[in-house]
Image (cartoon, rainbow, N blue to C red; front, side, top):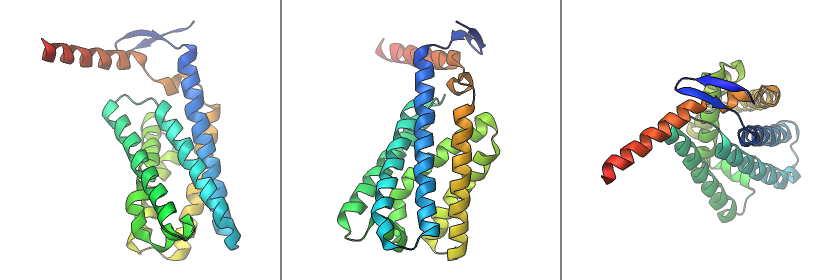
Amino acid sequence: MEIYQGQFGEFTVDKEDRRGVIIYRAGLAVAAACFATGAALVLFNNNPNIYPYLTALYTCFSLALGVSLLFIHIYMAALHRALQAFWVIGSISAFVVGHTDPQPFAVTVYTHPLTILGVGFTFAALTGIFFKEAFCFNRLETKILTPLVPTLLLGHLLGILPLQWERALLGICAIFFVVFATRKLIQAIPPDIGDKSVFAYLKGQKQEREAQLNA
């Protein structure tokens, strides 16, 4: 087993670590595939019969994103919990919107932009992943997606984006999301695990503070 030198000591990468990364990436791949498929249906098919498929695709997208957020490696525990909380808020909001309005979910969100104040939390969590990946790996696609996703959502919420711009931004987001997920699938696994010595150090610091408080 290969030994790595971290900031606070040596560490190894075990099967459990690798499994977590694989699940994280698989979740991103499924989420990207669902997002891109849904975007393609919206952009290239005007048939109202697509709406049930959009609902199913969004559900799959959200669940896959939730799985990725469960297994993602982030040094700042507070940030990790915040992204997971965003996903929970967005998921609950989507469930409420989908079950309280007789219109198809996609139609409701599009025609009632204020729903983005709830559903948009899911995309805030996704943007957090893009930001983390841009910061850690300096990937061009995530640098583009980090401002692009909130621009599309906020632009629609405020009603300041022309329809053609919204369609263009949606298409660009779908393309770069697929590029990002594909590149993650072929990336070496250890970099996604990060420096385990940092996690161990932070855990030790937390335990030390708890011990001092209980003393």
